[in-house]
Image (cartoon, rainbow, N blue to C red):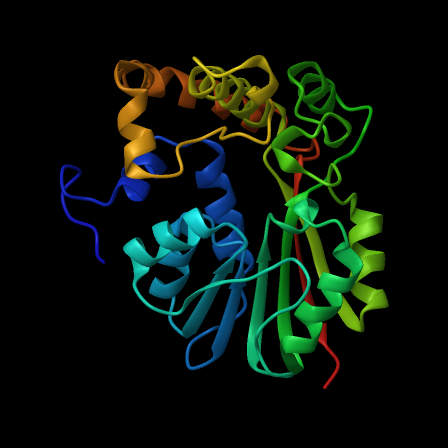
Length: 274
């Protein structure tokens, strides 16, 4: 499905145009993506299909996967075919099926991340390219302190995370242990963007949980709209957000004043031995 005017664009694209962290994620993804033209590519963690939409515009033949059935349905509505529902234990693809595997901000949700990482590498062809994106989960930093205050850390079951993320040394060790040669490890999303995103997620979650019993009000729930219906339910709050979006965007630009500070998200590239 291709985009048109803002009134006819898919809801995922409309929301993206008012997103802060998603734009940084997409830039980091596309900036570090290896060549994909004419190649078989696997996307893991497609979410509602936004990343799938932009990846497929880059070329290559993409298969997109997610663990959540609602995400799979949303992605299918946006990009059409080759969207697959998977579980947390194995991938339904033959060994050495793909030239490129992109794991996008999902492994932190998997209890047995080591076993699933082995599955991702198994599906990658010898000499294939691997892209790994995840939160860095570095404790002791101001952004992490805010996450803890808001209830977003893994020990509080925030976002349904099994762990807070992968500090660069841990990410490098994980990739190398599974036979990948690490080519680069970079970060993105500095303190002003990260903290504002968490505050917005918290506000949305509180609104989404209104009317539910206290036992249901945990952070396994949505922290962003996951369907057109969910976006519609936000109603006037989304209109207010859209109106103040330029000011919020201006706040995130303060990150440019501290260009040498480390980001809170990681993007790494590696290659499987040929």
